Image: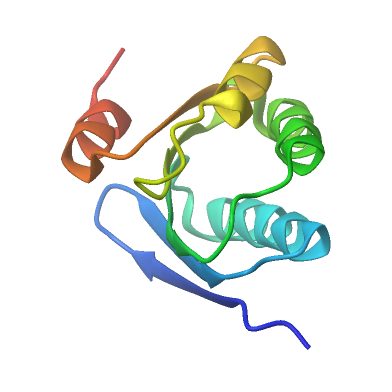
Length: 121
């Protein structure tokens, strides 16, 4: 049984998804589906994913496949920022997602990511 917890907050300018625990690949995919549904329902294409409280590093192949899925699913239609744990200095998901056409950024500085998310570039 998974100890993963996923929550969603709707801010005036963006949606925030908070994930903690030890998510499986299927749970990451479910999160992606939830993001798609929430963007469709709210009309807010700016998304902040707070994954700073996950327990363990996400397997490289899962990050790779999720980067591909992010690019294929959103392309330039959404802007996605992901807050990673401070112990996980890796932008692999961001690199793959961006190379597949997504507007994506990851990092460990929440304020900088929110600023990027809300900029009008």
